[in-house]
Length: 178
Image 1 (cartoon, rainbow, N blue to C red):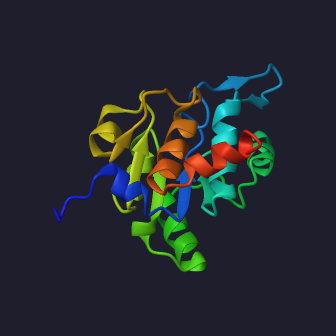
Image 2: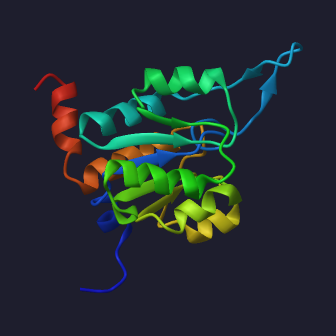
């Protein structure tokens, strides 16, 4: 076997999938009301993809540099148990998280779009990026979505993981009532 794993082989090992928010779960746009309150737009396909990962027994997490009640509400809706906001050093939080879960970095995936995500992406087993990620992030990702952040990239990577782990068809059949 070759020393270099394919993206599908890497995805087949994922036990924990971690996401950034701005530029991954959202389109990266930062909207503020006149009162200074933040607004974010999330994609329903992405949310269902995250829920499907959970149904397949894959833990999910968010590690983001910003802090927002909107993100906390969306994470709860998607049943993401591990939410870390206002994070300056994502790698430290990631290392603490996997230690607490008793899994190795090789069994983790991370989807990010910009330089602050690179330290985790370079250490996890499956690094993913949306189509509109920064070129340096795309160059270092094992897998790149066709969709842009906030427009289905998270669903796309969720489906790729489920297919690699041969769980996609059973989940689809269950959704169809079979």
